[in-house]
Image: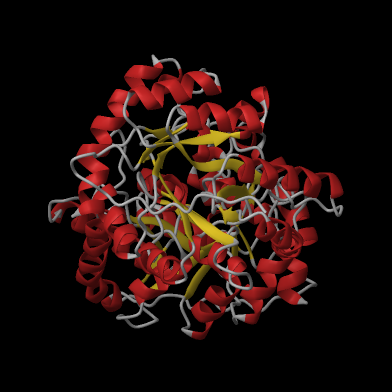
Length: 290
Length: 290
């Protein structure tokens, strides 16, 4: 059994970026080594990894690059895509490899985006998510990895994720131990939900908040909804309110910034990180430490 | 006090289109008179009107055009947009005019799209919706008009409607009589919701379902999310499931087809109505009468 780092990072206003994590999707053009170097030089405490960047060097080498730079891996993104009609042994195998990689990278949190609908049977697709999640839980538990179910914004229900609310993710997690199935709180996906405060409190009470991910909702939206995520402060999300709920729910883990945005992607990575740090300190951190 | 037609249309498989209503937004290029003529010639029972088309001739003339063709007005769209920071007497006056027009048009249902957020204070905007709705209720009640709160898809929360779920609309309706504040069930906006079946049942039990509106969710989405509504059958929505929930909730009113879609808008209106009738009979009607 691989030992995995438990992530309880005390917030410290004297070291404000210790809990801040750069998700590699934010600096999309950078290799893993470049992103790790950029994050470490900027004084961040952690990095969130996408599998494409890990696969370029392999999980063992990736783990070494991160450890040598003194960073934690806040999460690995992503497993999932398990809603197909067929049983999908290949999809399950791929998820087992993702679990192995998470363990190798010494992160407890494997973000799971469960997939959209192959037809018009939404209830059926949701039932398959529950069935196939159950198949992966023992494998993840043996490796000390938590399957972090990510509710995506309802506009992605058809093509990406039939988990659309935090409450639904919690309901799917409920049959399983909290150390093996968690949920992701991503502001872009959840900010609109009129009962979000209660849902975050429930997620905290259940000990299931795997990750707090922040980015803004741009208004108007970008033509490609996927790329409508913005830097904190560039959109309409009230990070102070959501941050209070996350803090009050007892979350003390890393705060990951994951932005898909054509303008951000075409900017210099170091400048993106500096902006991210400033906005984090101004808009996100105060409610988490207050 | 104006008498308004109560809309309880028994479904009749021998007259399948009697409960079908053409929303004027579906045949966007047609004037009110053209849309009424098209709907009547196609054997539909009703028409849903947008205010822009009503305003072109005035509500009294519009009411006469509809009545002369033997149609009902299933709903008037729309009032609302009451989330601004200022008290908004002009916005309230405009809503009172919309209520007057609904009464003149002899429809009970005035669709209310309540507006987006002027800043980052989503909770504040939602509170203003409740306050200003309460200001309109007596005026609507005196005229026999029901304010039909429409939850819009969460992707419109920032720019159009801070009411994002049916449960939230029901909660906002709850302080008011069911004959004066209702809710709209629109498949495009609500299909993704994992607890939709329960919410529709609650809406029915409360006697608050003002309108059942159908159109499909296209996948992939159109570049403009507003125009991503499709003809039933062209997308991913399971109309049989949602139709059963609406029927089991006791709804027996008109079924309105409201499609914003560039391809539909560039097609011949009569052909659009024929396709709409066919898809309605194949995909929507069976679960409503079954």
